Image (cartoon, rainbow, N blue to C red; front, side, top):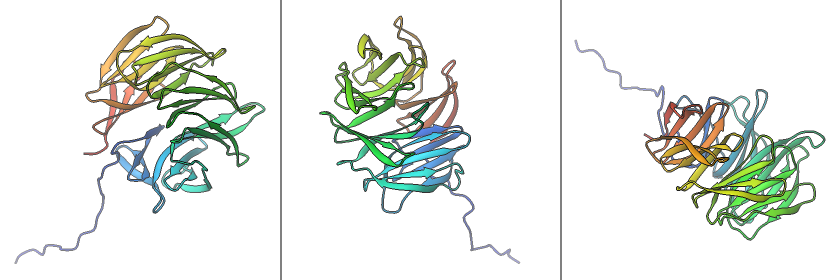
Length: 312
């Protein structure tokens, strides 16, 4: 008698692409990846939840978190901005929605928690039309609108100790604005191509900008004057500040450690494929590659300690 073969099957687990290119942010052991108009929350190579809105694609996002709060802010194709509570990552929920009032799409976002007498959380949004807008998320109102002659905003950085905001653009422009009086402090001219990153030393006295024009520029943030220009001989796609003027740069298929005081390259490591973005956590680096891999790297010796295949 032949055994009966079941013809009714139920799906137990599905393995699919978790990253197909674009923006990625890391928090603890999770990666938030932008894919197919949504944000995937990835842990150990598996999508554990998803941030999405039907018929309203997410085009960029940012996140900030602690042990008691995880906030993700998403910018959508419709011009809406949504704030998500992701403390329970398996069940993300929208807590607020507002219109961005940008004339174009939002290309980059940045969250910053204020301290001292100016407590609260502020959001900066950079658009493709050359404007930067600032929002007070605690008091729930729009506070600043900064206009430039540039086009796409590529990076936003808040000063760690002062109410200053720095914005880099695709035309090479780098600007500093004072949030107390809404005025332009300085137009920091040095780059001739897109500014891909701007980092500030822990003391807040120096800053470093880098771009696809293959140079790093060290700035005095007291006078906002250029201290030095360091050629690194390859377009820079990302930068992480390790120590005072000691940085890790993503150049081509390599990660390189530079001491910009000397200046000199200290060490480098090949990643096997072009590095498209670079982020840093405590003692750990994270990067994405052009073949859609998510790499975790030791900051001590630039050795790869983990790899997630984003798109197999």
